[in-house]
Image (tube, rainbow, N blue to C red; front, top):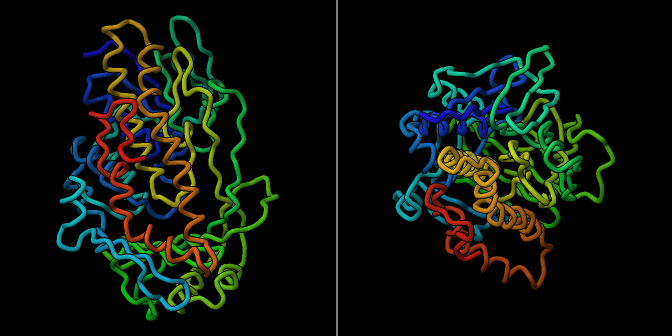
Length: 399
């Protein structure tokens, strides 16, 4: 049993996975979540093999399978006709798991959080604790909360997301970069989508200046979608704003009926300005470290936000497990950053690049783009086959 005391700020996917990984190593921890109940903005999350591999190792395999849907394939369609550009099997014939060693799941975020919490058995999880600051010293870190409580730890992990309270302590104030795209999200019953050719794959519809991604959750009864539109600027200081449902429908005017049907089938309209972070100069101080979106917010076009967060959480737990022997926490945190930094920078870049390819106008570049889409599994094997335990700092494969 380690004598380290770790305070995890943030009880989302990253914070709960980290708690489970720390428990596996026998490291003492407390998780502090600002909400009074476990919930997360966003309807669903896609978990690829690099994430599900680690969740299985943490004992969540059966429970995760029970609450998830395995897409039949990854399908990319043309925006207007619905013509299939690329079709890569996932659940069909077990092809994806056979290739990458772990399954691909679509799951509701709340169901995933509940599964993680149940696996943790509520152990050392403190709800209603909004972190408002911390004070780092040579012998520990004092963490302060809005409810007047405080806590002392040897290490503080900022797993508190895009708008991290912990990040400024490590790197000062950093503003997100607007990606030039906004996203409309929604959940739609499959029965309300009569024009959808096939609801079982994870599907992209690619077209000039925009794209639609959707996949099934909730036992295949519901489709989760993200409709992405390129815009010149975002002036609202908030990253989300209400809008009319017709705004999304108008943005996809002239597209295949399945697309306009889907984006118009929600009751409440809203759009998110999609931001990421420029690579940070560092991820840690002597005793404070960042994971997930707090360290490397990325746009969702590769579906890797949650998966990279899971990888981070496993890696930082592994590095902290070695810390007592060395007696040097900063070295342990530096090893973690070195292991993770290059990979996440490339995934961030690729996530932006994916939108660029999806949004190409019809013309001579389309044939080359479509050939890239046809080779996706080979091109992205370095992401999906990754093993966060075994990885070395430069383990990027064919990046």
